[in-house]
Image (cartoon, rainbow, N blue to C red; front, side, top):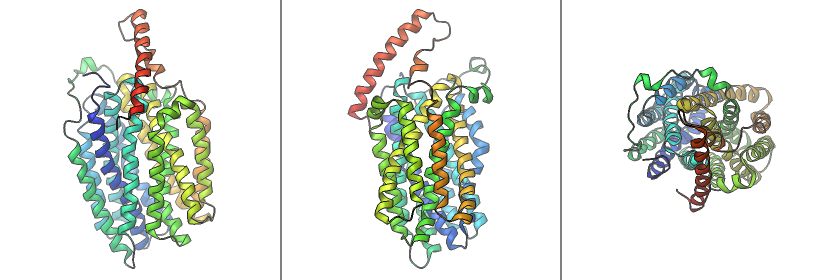
Length: 429
């Protein structure tokens, strides 16, 4: 079956990702509250949040290499097991060191799931469908980010913060396990390639030097760092300003709901502005809004800021995935996506630690000013983005074929783009 046909697998992937991401989004603020209850300060919260990204730094590229040469689906259940175990064992841990370790296991599980899932979308989607299908795929993340914080806020509170935060972490582990129900036969059968047919591995340096890949990685890093620090440090801001955990949960979910709304209207926004302008404008607005969180505004104003910020942050992830996939060599797409995720984890490891240091010196709201600066740099990089979606791939000639075949492929690609836009208006998910 050709890529682009029968997208039932994509719906099941979105459902599975919703539960997996919901568990992580529920666990991240719960980890912060439990760490605070166990005596952690702002710096310690930043370190624990950073360890979440530490283990994946060493695993991303090997997992990407393996996926380029084999199947994507096996990484999905492995990721679910690690997420579920990391969440539950974080709740049972009674020391900050143990919490940091299990937070790292949770991060490794999330990385495994995401590499497998993103590679599946790239492999089973036609080129002109990448923006749309990656947008739909990331709706799963946004749904999880919507429900997770609300569930955490509903469970965490009262005088015994250590007990209620532990309960939330164990519940998150149980929620992650539900993702197993949507993973059956999610990947189309593929014929294993011999080592001769696979050829030589594309060097990492060559992938990173490909135009479009570094920019896509940095934009993704900045956007995810903003989302990650927002999840980890908004509870700290709430404690400082006297905002209840339940309200913080609603605010985080409002941000996620705005991100879902953004991804539902991604296709018309791309038609109106194009990828480069859309990335640039949303990164600039996101920078201003991040800095606005540092201001001592009332809760209703903070809610408006977070809603607008969520809408802006919804653009960066799916478009950066498409940028990296379409810029990378065809036989190294999973590795390129793994490098993008490595960049994300570097941001997740470094940004919270830097945020913890800044918060300890300049106050709990100062990290959001740092995020504003990071997004501003991303807006400059977005201006240097490569061509619009699909043009690079449609213009490539297949090995062993003449220019006439390449011309016919481009003509078919243009017609497919128009058809893809019509389908996207109806909504596949």
